[in-house]
Image 1 (cartoon, helix red, strand yellow):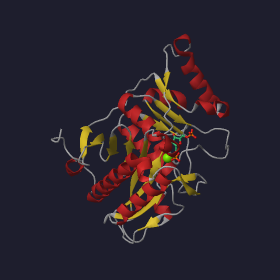
Image 2 (cartoon, rainbow, N blue to C red):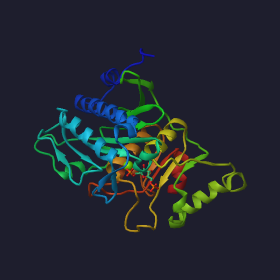
Image 3 (tube, rainbow, N blue to C red):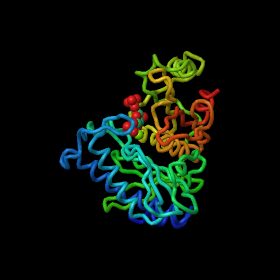
Image 4 (cartoon, rainbow, N blue to C red):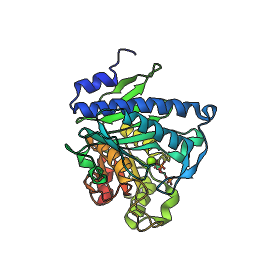
Length: 320
Ligand code: AHM
Ligand code: MG
């Protein structure tokens, strides 16, 4: 299938600034390198703990650190990137350039699945850099609506890169030569679904509307929904969102009472917002539980957010 268009050809024929395209090509290259390390696993001595914690007080895995290093090095070399921010770094990094774009990323999403050979991924968001002068941390604090592009790579049975740079969401599969080939030109999330994804072990901590929503799904055809639901929970947001983009469903990581002052577990700028843009562009919906997730105004780099995304009918039912 070597006649399938490459990422390069796709970007050359889809709207988006040259700076955004350049950044996406670099991110694509970094993801190929990360996928090689993921595939090597224990043979490359890539499994296990790194022996450090990140700014979120989470124990870093070796692959979290390696993926973060790879993306950092690749973006430093990308002429259109003025700065970048990572889940694994406390502060933003500036490249010394101005103009172009800013990149935010979760280098290795699904860290708890690394050592057990379950799908993991990389999530990224691209924002405009200020036209003049050096970016500051505030330059990165833009709502999801300002994103120029967003996407993720999922390291699963196949390595797949999903991006949105125009009105469409496209998926590319990594071929044997390490080239991204366009395999899904226009992903669409079905409006209706019978599948939900939530970490059920947190049930006792949920807010009442979430309890009620899931209780109704569980009642299936005997309850008010009048249809049976199925549950899937990978524990890697990339893999759960990928399933939803491919066949529909709803994903929830809502606020819960374990840490009442936090809006949720997932991070707004490099997890919630890019996934929300992909899902909205694919005809689905994304909410923080109260308003469109893309409208949430960030006030800090590692800010958390409640996430409900997927099939539009389910997201609006829960938000209501
Ligand atoms: P990570 O970025 O440190 O891997 O954390 C985010 C992950 C998501 O991929 C996933 O949806 C969630 O954490 C699962 O968390 P938990 O197992 O605590 O419910
Ligand atoms: Mg993550």
